[in-house]
Image (cartoon, rainbow, N blue to C red; front, top):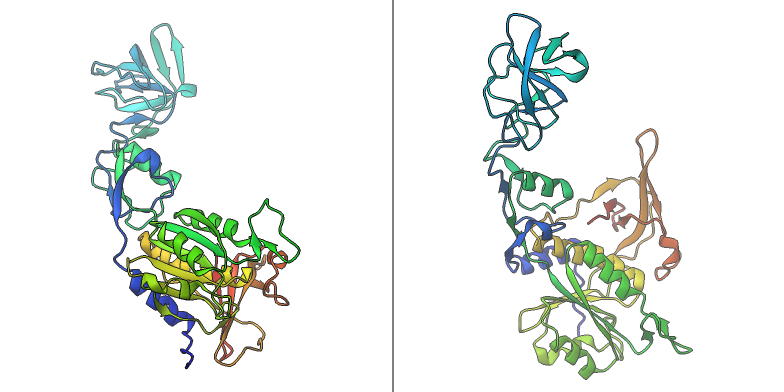
Length: 391
């Protein structure tokens, strides 16, 4: 059988994004459940903020008259405005955030006025100072949050200030993780003499959650076609991350196990190291599968390169990775392959980008990846690029 040609990283990513395009949907959620969700439509203010001219300082609101003395006729405080209109020569005590009374022309700071009985003596006052005009933050119709933004606390504050209690967001991608292999056991269960703990599933679930997906774990399937197929069939997830069983050896059974489910392999493998066994496909029922290598580092590299852009695209976020060209010493690469590794990136005090490759000696070792916050990509032609890792 003739081996299928390997995809380039860029071609594999492009095919994945084009395949999943248009498969996402949006829903309405209440504001208190919107944190971390991604807006499906722009959000506009429904009312001005503040809704009235408001005091920015404690003091007195006055209606300027001919002299420096004002008769105190009442009070305006937060939540309770002064009901009447001020006449020239009148003042009311006012607190920060309280509405300015009708007829008020200025605000006198507390420390710049003196009380004598029911009279206020003013030392210094400038019209308009220390007053927040109605709508100085935003007016009805102003853009509060653009479409395609992951909502943070400040976004929620703006919407709440405008009285918006529900909004349209993209649905969370439903992703199921299936680990495979006779040699791995769950964390907390002692492996046998030739086994290993499942190091990838906790990492994958954490990263998926960080990216806004709803992640579930289907457990560990043995190297058995029926076990693999049954676990996939029992889940209604839209996307699956299947770990292991991807290299094509006698015991790598994932693709064969799913043949009866109508598996169509769209990306058979990618010309990169580590991570060449990565594959992408679709079942007849419409769900997508990302086949990750069993090598932990290779799987995490493939996750960042292919799964992360897909999850961002499904949530209306910019999906194309922002690679940064960097100058790095040449690294020997296998012909036709790209070398991708984790790295630490930072900035010197002089503002120079500094890159430290991590885990060069062993592509399966996790401890050397301490501090990793980027991927370093070395192309066969000698170009080097850096991809920051973020949600």
